[in-house]
Amino acid sequence: MTAGDWAALTLVALAGCLAASVLAWWRPRAGGPAALGALALAGVLAGAPAEVVARPHAVLALLVAVAAGCAVAGGGPLTTLVFDVVDRREPPDDRLAAAGRVLRGGAWIGGLERLAVLATLVAGWPEGLAVVLAVKGLGRYPELRAAEDAVRTGAAERFIIGTLVSVLWAAACAGVVVLAR
Image 1 (cartoon, rainbow, N blue to C red):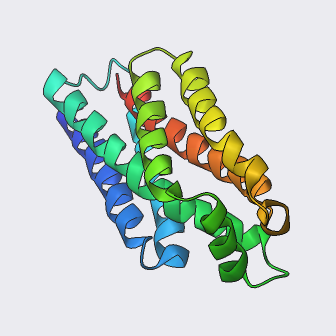
Image 2: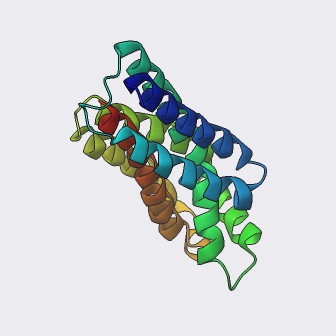
Image 3: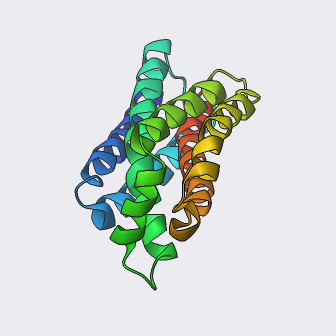
């Protein structure tokens, strides 16, 4: 296989991850695992030895753009799937909806958080993760402490779980780009 073939396969796998991530917003049980599988495949392909794969700058730019799309689109449905596992004993929609009333704007904040995490890692500035997480934590702290039903809904626990899932997903998407360099 030529270097261009490896680059094309990596892009196809990453595009598959993006498509599955978008699908996961409507069908999380199908799209979520498909996105994880496609991202894993992209990571394996991106990790090919540098002697085998010489990627031009245009291909790397495209990889960054598609990985950013995967990071932003895939984190929300994946977090919802994790919450489904956490809430197996209770109807998840009730607790998710109640926590959503405490932590308004979570989908938008999560998407921006994943984009910022990907950007800091791709830029080679991992310290930026601390900045992103500090801004998010400090911004949410008053809501988590002041909400009357925060304890009942487990909003603080959901905040932590959601943030960790979101950051890990974005870091995995960034990892594909870093491996592809």
